[in-house]
Amino acid sequence: MSETVNGPKQKKWFLGTLWGTIAGLIVILLAMVIVDPYFHYHDRLPGISYRLYSERYMNRGIASNFTYDAIITGSSMNQNFQTSLMDRLWGTSAIKIPFSGAGFQEVSDTIEAGLNSDNQVKYVLWGLDYNGLNRDYDWKGYDSYPEFLYDDKLLNDVSYVWNKSLIFEGLITDLLWTLQGVEGTTFDEYSSWTGGRGWESISRTYQRSESILPMEEITQEEIDRVTKNITENIVKLAKRHPNTQFLLFYTPYSALYWESLYRDGWLNKQLDMEAIATSLMLECENIQLYSFARKTEITDNIEFYRDKEHYVPEVNPMIMEWIAEGYGKVTKENYRELIAWEKEYYLHFDYDSLYEKNDETK
Image 1 (cartoon, rainbow, N blue to C red):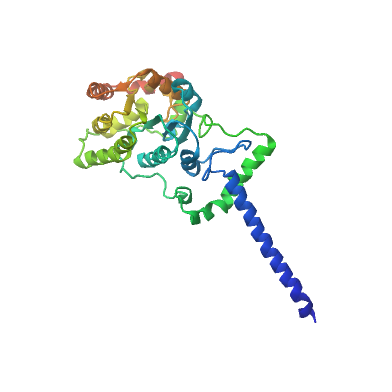
Image 2: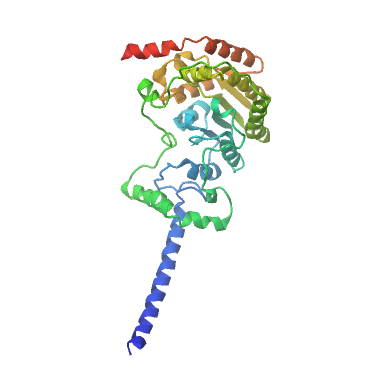
């Protein structure tokens, strides 16, 4: 008797649960597609406070779906640039899509997505890391990527629209910010950082080598690697998009970076790589290349750095203003003299003075 009574109830409960689950999944799907917290389908919606926070989840969507005419990108050396300043200096409407720990291919691929969008991109501002020159052209700093956000395969989107982490960290956060009246993240704020500077910060990651090794000469393998890296990721990209001006610059590392090369016997080799990369890029008429090696009031002052490579946020607007006024432009006529100056300067630099200044401030 009980089985007869319970049977319809169990069936009703099962069907109710099933349809409730389906309805819930549909509501979540629609919310993820409509709000689109990672911009996989469209630009930001008016009235929604979007949180910009996860570069490898958001940058491809920003590049493909936002409306703009200029791009700021590169590694973490570019995270503190402000699109508002670029807009003032160049009269643009820019986006910022930096990648912490990026290789050249990762940046190049995302620029390509932007240049293949419906936008007419006038400028690409891209900081090139010295330590990225000698990497394989397809080097990546991360093993896993959210591939479902990088393709147009509809079936892959189940990993997006029903992704628990993205729902809670993206969709729900955006909706809560909107309800609470919190302003969405601006591109000036996106991925920007503040924090340590000077010796106290640098000493956490940099330890001076006790020995000074003999200078090494560049090998044919390294010549080929640099050549392929620059050709595949920068030169070919620029040639495919001749109507876009590429504003490229070597990110100004501190004198301690050059000391590390000097003591490891890599200084001459690094400068030879710079010469190869520079000569290749200068063959493209739509590439403007800049170097701030002679801005020694910055590079020799440890207070402008949080480690031997990363300059502090106030350097970024300086770089943008230098480029806007044409300072530090590298040309076919002057690049060999520039590299010769760098070699002379850092081969004979008084690196001990950096440590003596630190001792004086203690």
